[in-house]
Length: 254
Image 1 (cartoon, rainbow, N blue to C red):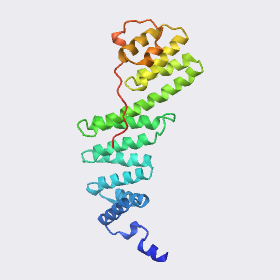
Image 2 (image 1 turned 60 degrees about the vertical axis):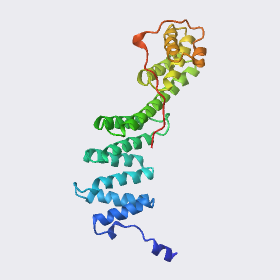
Image 3 (image 1 turned 90 degrees about the horizontal axis):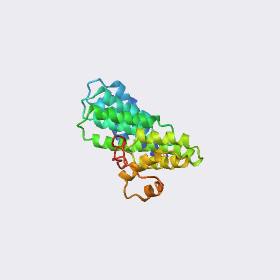
Image 4 (image 1 turned 120 degrees about the horizontal axis):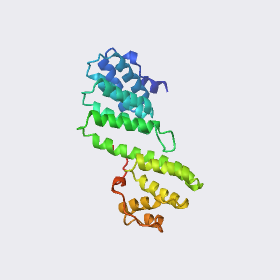
């Protein structure tokens, strides 16, 4: 056991006399998936390297990545954001903005939880798109925004469905309308509008006809729509009230 320990000494930043040596050693620990050691080394570098040193943005990048691999997503987001803030012209800036947003998104694991990190992720994606509109990562960011917006829509839909199933239709209608207003392009918008029709039918409210007109126009061959709108009078759709065509939701691209 003593021999094994001698072959694999503990990583210590005190053993390195230059920033270059510490960077090389920290990167080796990163490659070995020794995330704690990598964080220790790169964190030291981010405080010791001069502002114009080319190793500084790289140190923030690997520090952030090591935090992410250790499931420390908030710390990862903060370190990626430092690249965006301090080195906006660096080639790592746009990719760092993407990874910062992804790190916030990973903190929001389920739609039922408080969506603050999901909303922060969307804001971070939009900041990235605004700063680097021609970057190759923009299309990926837009796809991942669509996924997050659908998760937010699911959260509102499930809240409305809770009231719907308990026949508290007026309360449920508020949430279903919220889905259509805020997330009308998501796949969940279709479900919310069908629940609205069912709610209006239950309370005998005439708005069911308008929503069925929209659903029939958008999903003309949808059997679920036909079933929900059965018995609802056919009316002309209002051009100024037609929601946008929904887009499919895809998982984040890596």
